[in-house]
Amino acid sequence: MRFLKIIVVVLFLSSCSTEEDEIILTLELDEYDLEVISYFKEIALGFEFGSSSKITRKWCSDLKVYIGGESNSILTEELDKIITEISSLTTDNFNIDVVSDSSLSNYYIFFGNGDDYAELFPNSASYVQSNWGLFSLWYNSSNCLNRGHMYVDTYRTNVTQAMHLLREEFTQSLGLARDSDKYLSSIFQSSWTETLSYTDLDKDLIRLLYHPKMSTGLDANAVDGVLSEILLSEK
Image (cartoon, rainbow, N blue to C red; front, side, top):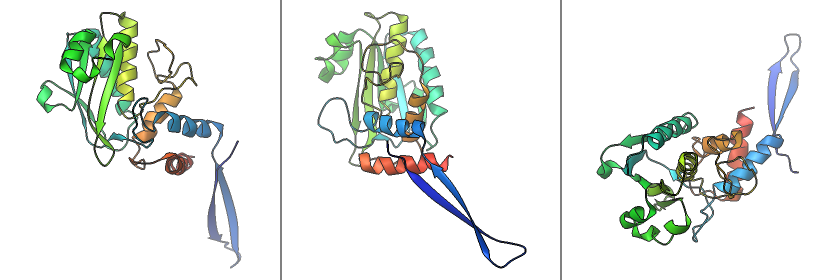
């Protein structure tokens, strides 16, 4: 496995001599860091479907969420919890707000029946029968996400399943849009699970995508360098 290394050289003058002594501090990415970088590139580059290029995309402006469909206090409370968790991880001034007027929103969350969701968003009609939850996103020429919508089918799911789908689809709508079979407990696990929390890896992916040094439009090679720089700076 490849290890990346950065050398930081600190020079100081000895009080007893004019000679410069050299201290070399070696910082290197550990196994977990490399795991984070690998998983980030698997999850955060591109989308699961379609032909969009495999580059970073994220919300460059605030996410304004409107909740539609059928009233569901359990899922609304769970969404508040998820937003609080996400907000604790982001450091690039990204904010998520729930708004009461759909005209002020750029992201629509629908709770209810898949057919009713498809009436609102006809392009999703062919997907609702085989999916209890799904999301759609749009982005601009700067690869900034600028609108989207998702749904959770509250008719075909129980409470735990609906809460899981809400966390999964909403988190992927941040720009972490791909699935993986690598980690069973991850919210990005491609197989069906009912996990209701983020793993440490999941948290790091959210944190790093919404880090001030992470830009949109980065391919795998560029992402590798940026992530290495961030992780090494945190040593």
